Image 1: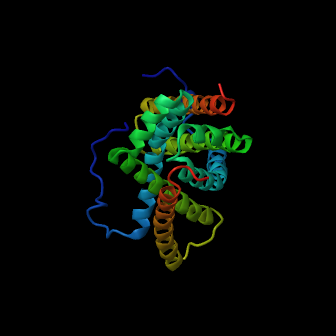
Image 2: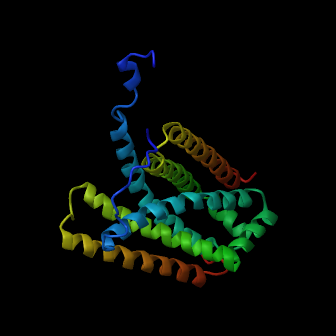
Image 3: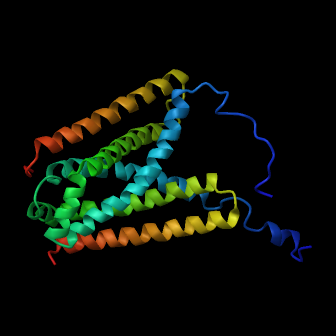
Length: 132
Length: 126
């Protein structure tokens, strides 16, 4: 009963792309990507727990261009999901549903997520060598 | 022709019953995760390029290991709830949906326990 072959009305083919819908699916996509990324977090913790050699291996993976790219994507997904999540929490409290506010808060989320990601990487670069 | 009564055929297909709990747990874990992840990323920025000894020392502090354990718990809880909603939306074959949700829940618990044990081992210096 679930998999009937009845035709669906078109949606992606006819609706004008809007920031609201884009940010919404990005929130879901970033969430799924972050969930997958937890595997990398577990890998890193296990490498640290198993001693200096396995830790060095993990560090060289994240230091490589491929690992670094994944890390950058994960951090951006994290900050995007975090900022848009706060936007969601305001909606949950019943605030910010006016159309203009929705668009403004959406743009703020993108700017904030980008800024936080850049700040994080600048900090990491500046503290190279372990200044705590 | 099914021999089940009409009532037996519809049992379990009704309201989510515990749906409100899921909704609130998702929000609560989200609120907790905001400061936890801000702290985590800031900490990571400082120890990411440091050597093994520095990383171990950082994790040895009671505050850092406690926050990390809380982060791990809240993250896997929040992630599992989120993935569950994604499955509920996109997997229409009922048995496959239920199986997938159960598998992800078990995986989340396994990964959370492994991570927490790893953190405690590092923190307690074994």
